[in-house]
Length: 231
Ligand code: SF4
Image: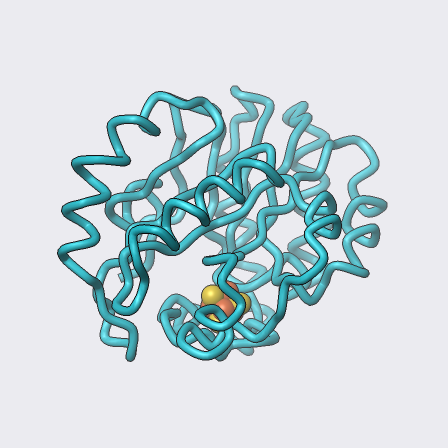
């Protein structure tokens, strides 16, 4: 298990995988990381405070992930993030958030008056049918102007049933509407979603070399590539 890392190549930052209450949605067919969620508030806060004490602030940028949304972190943890960020002179904080929280984002922005808050949302694909029916991520995207509320998005690629055209279109669309994108190449994880090796081979040979050096694209070939994971 690793919960703290420093990303030192593109978009330098410290990253923490915090513990949190259960994801409010919790039904995405490909998601196994909600197994890290807990209902024990004291345990959550203790683990998170110990982790936050590792933050040095050396990059002025911190990413918090929590196998759910920022709204599922306890208040005590949020207060400690704010205190740490202020003390360590952190200017930018990334939080992950489920799309349905779109109307509540200001609550977090107002809670951190001294930092720029960047929300990362899991879009996974712009194909509404595939997202809702296969991935079981239950929101429809029809009005792309709403996406400006989020700074960055995650795409999930190379799953069974996707096509090269879908993946290419997803990357192109994500780059149009978000300042940064993260591309996750799916790895089998004992959920009902499976990886398509032919798509992986195509992506790694034809797309990856073209995207690799773009500053606003992070590509996770392995889901441990950010150096934080629970196993
Ligand atoms: S919203 Fe995120 S954390 Fe929740 S089930 Fe879906 S992928 Fe997992």
